[in-house]
Image (cartoon, rainbow, N blue to C red; front, side, top):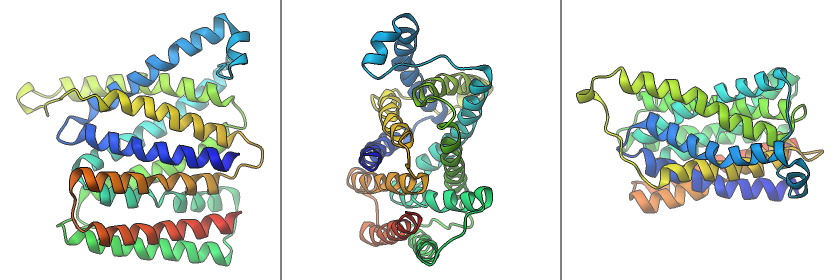
Length: 300
């Protein structure tokens, strides 16, 4: 069941990436981040209040949010800091790079999750996992060569470093999720994370938006995809945390399956934004995903 939930989360995650690109393309990034997060919070707050006032009803429909301790709040706050930092890097990269470059780079996240598991949990790689790592890195290198055809030099383009930083932070969040989901109720994690992300992004928006002179600000344009980002994120995270909550669920496999969502983002983005070298980059993306699949099978 957790595999099906992970697959569903992957599909929705692909739609989420497309909505992000549509929202930040030629738009101010921090307002997009804030208002999409605010949409998530507005959807979650009634459930949190209802869980407090009518606990039995919300338990019966399986969306009950329990109260948690101060220590648990701090653990969720730390997750929020990690994720919001990842979003800031990723949103700026997505604004300034083709989605057909960003999506394959984001798909390498399971490699960094695996490396983190090796460093933190003293895991060792088997032959299949090593083949997966080598395959993924090889096609990542080929992707960088394809990027040069569009004037994107991986070593000199700061937005490439932004998306790599966002990907590394996302991998860190994946490892941390496995840790806290065993300690804290999954709906409490998702709900309070949604609240904390707004509280973190509010000051960031105020400082970055209003400390800059009006004539130098990047204009912000409201788009329907902005609140859609937050609502779709709620759905994909609900499916993701639900998958993680199953006994025997493997974070390495779930992370790999979720990366499959980049195929949805890649194909949809290619059609919407008419990007270049689609066939070549598509082959490299498939190579990266083949490497991720080998890592997953080696972890099973």
